[in-house]
Length: 374
Image 1 (tube, rainbow, N blue to C red):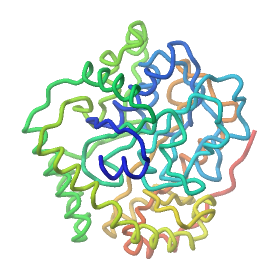
Image 2 (cartoon, rainbow, N blue to C red; image 1 turned 45 degrees about the vertical axis):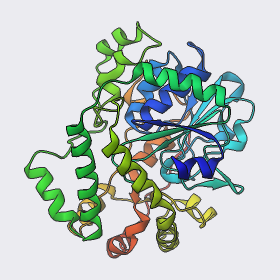
Image 3 (cartoon, rainbow, N blue to C red; image 1 turned 180 degrees about the vertical axis):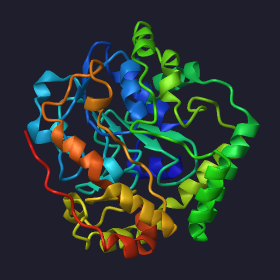
């Protein structure tokens, strides 16, 4: 946690996952029944964390400029709190949410700043992921301003933790190290083939988590409570609230310490990818942001993903379709869902650290037709 504590100047709480941290922050600062403004595009499980906290998700219109909340088109007077996404590391308009309870999901934005101030320091809480920038395979950090909040959150965390196992920690560390080796040695293509052969790659059509409306209605009768929502929240991280042992914590610390050293490579990759006509406009706004991924907006996204894979470049972190189409009836829908559908259909996130491998394919891609607005 040292890197995050020094960067934010805040009190930090170590967690098994970013997911648990988001739930703890929502429960600590928001009262059941309050309305939370959130992006229509984010990791599937985020919606269920909001519901588990007993809160009403209010889906914002999406800005095609950066894939985040379109702050200029929302009625902030109608909501009690805001949950940012900072998609791929591009910052939400944190300045626009002053006066509201603000929970910052900075899973993608560990290295992003606004006006020289790190994300994760603008709201009541900043929730970091150790499996994104650090690529540690597990772990999260909750950063808060007041020590009294830290102590209360620590007690709430401990009440929700379940026992882990050294076997699970060993497998998690081994998997993380194998992924890093495959990337560094340019072995992504054979690694993907092996994962598919062994049945280890997650299959998905649209959302990777089945909604199960009837089961969700039953879980909602127990809010605010997280365990009833485990079938949805755990998704591809079944031990998201399991205690981590010394091996996992050692690996997390080791990977986190490497983040500053990657900054130069990330910035160089961002600069190269920003030259492409398909890059999302917000990337060019500030080329000094070492983004987690650089979002491109391309005409034939699925074909591009397949072509990249043939060149040994894997694509991940696709969040589609938007919540409006995924969970009608469980959210207050966006007043304009069309930009989110357009973004989800066309966005292609690229790891800037390995931009050079992807550029031969990316240079041939065309921009999509323009977004329509209602």
